[in-house]
Image 1 (tube, one colour):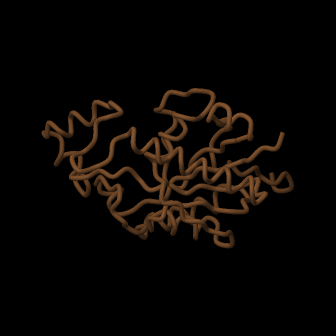
Image 2 (cartoon, rainbow, N blue to C red; image 1 turned 180 degrees about the vertical axis):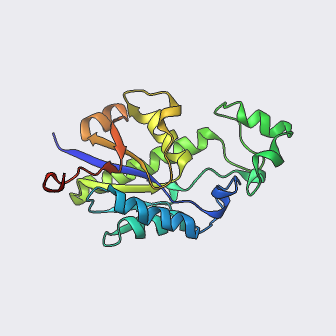
Image 3 (cartoon, rainbow, N blue to C red; image 1 turned 90 degrees about the vertical axis):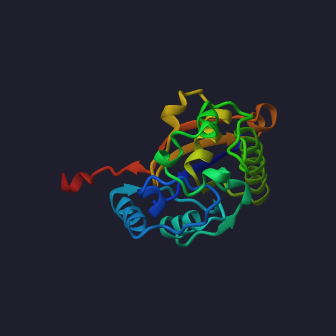
Length: 212
């Protein structure tokens, strides 16, 4: 049965990430540090060869795609954008710590939402729709290896909801420029809406034996 391998990777750092500021729909570019770290990771690790990149439309993701996969077709997918944090956008943990609505949101219930923002349940629904459309596109076009460039919240949600085996969500958090490889086959996805989690991405570079 034909399999489809996807590397799901988090974008590089922005200035907001560096300063501990919540950003969801805010469209910030990579910071100089974030872009530099991605370039350094490319020198240190091996990223997969892919034939199409599906990206959140936000700049921090499309810029990451252009650095990591500069010669690869880029497809923007609106459903891969980060959670809309409503009034919590562009605020730090310290600024929000004493707000009751923030504490309630942190309780983790699916129907809780930031004021004027998006619930986890809503994010899960659009993440599923985005992933389903990506898989169908890969199947129809014959692309068997692709990358998804998206956000930390989307990655942990996607893997915890649809990935097998089931892991503690704490182990499904992606660092900037890193993520997970997943494998999908038609029967598993259409029958169970599930995929296999293979491991981490990018990969440790194996030293050339000639120079060891």
